[in-house]
Length: 555
Image (cartoon, rainbow, N blue to C red; front, side, top):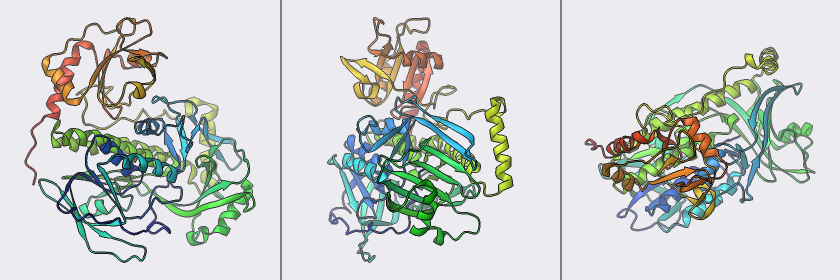
């Protein structure tokens, strides 16, 4: 559902380059971003909010007008909430509250993924959208910051770096394809968010680990002109005669994906007449629907072995690619820059050593690989072209439905890899929760009424786990000040010393699940440490020592 690799050449994308700033070569931005899809846009918005000077380099002259990614989960909904894009009020988002099913050729259920209700981040487990709509909103949020400059119509052709920064050589590219004279952009750091065929990654020579998972699929984005009902609204038809995906495409849209069969010519598959023939059994015709887009994508699975080279980092599809069956491709990219943004902030303002950025890839890569494994596992259920293989698959999966004891254990919750976490803490690296609270006279979701950043939440609910007085030394308080962290006691409505009132009791259950009296939460919503009150001071001092580690000489 996230067909995010950008086609090599799409109509309507090129345009005149933004006027070159004659001072570009002399001016030094804090961060240059190459690539301005959702991942680059979010990073620009986050850094702009902190007041950093950001220069964006984007080869295309405008937002690509056709759908690509169509799904995000509850965690990404919370990330988007942080820049003011909300599933509960934004008409571009279609929250989903149903099962995601996998059915065989006889329409018998093989697998059910529960996408009902809200996730730990409070928002719906699944949400659908059209990518051009999301890009317009993210672009507006990035450009509202006066320190963010978006330079369209420029192609990065060289990257050079030294101890103090990065120089990017760019060429203007116009409608004719002719390129103008090169000039340079200088920044302290560079982030390549430029897609699966990343120029930045290739210029750096970063190697990929490729799992050899390749399947071509025809992607059809449809706009029905009359009401249509689909039950369930999102499902996979695991029919070896033509494996098919049927999902929402955002408000007013639907998406079909049809797998190319062995020996099939993808050029013949990728024709409008072929699209309408494939859609005919689903009741769609040129009389009742608009074929917004048809294109063939090759679903793949790989990741970069290194995500950083000196002052240059990569994110999103430049760093990893996965099949779309779990709807996590764009989600992973947005998580990348949400992790990276707070680390760049600490480094740029001198609150942490540059080596903090070395934790970015090691933290994010195992998390991404979790979803790549999940996506491939789901892909192996549907991408079965042979009747005998499909029959064996059906027997195994239907037996597991009849007897849940035969089903494999669900994968553990994804956690970040080794990085900025308390040593030996089993809860570190897991996603925290968000719920409704009352704080400082305001009621709403935690992020809306309390804010963003580092937090130390202390359990003040009645009961044996309630933390007593928390003693912090001057050293740990200095760490909190350096991070801009808030220390808050979270309790029930009748807790006398609660600064944050847990209106629905979800934080009480969360503290109990963690077995903690105090939880240190990072700006990307992940748990740094879950500890008892007595261990909090030492945890904070260790965090401060890690952030202030002296940097080695860089060549």
